[in-house]
Length: 147
Image (cartoon, rainbow, N blue to C red):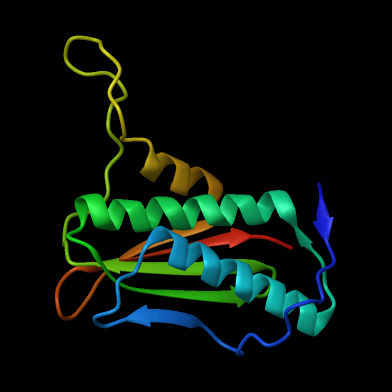
């Protein structure tokens, strides 16, 4: 485990970081929000975070955001918050369809591209929840320990 005792970013606002409305939300936006939230919390409290665990949280965020773009009609918003020793990331999209894991092989036994994002999210996250949004679409929330 590589531990980071970062104290360089204490200017991060307390509470969740959000992207909503008409702003484009990309995987890089969510990853940046996670890095800032974790570094800010650790800088403010002096507690270290695990670099490898942070990489897991960044991968989960990338998968959720990419899946929302590819399969959910686009990202309609995201929230990132440090909750205790974990990062909580929520990504909303326009689709009511639940995420599914695809078989890595097609009907002829050939390898498919894609289809592995949802299993990655479920494996790396401590908790994953999918909820319907009142205005349509869904929100997927994943909690990944980082400290």
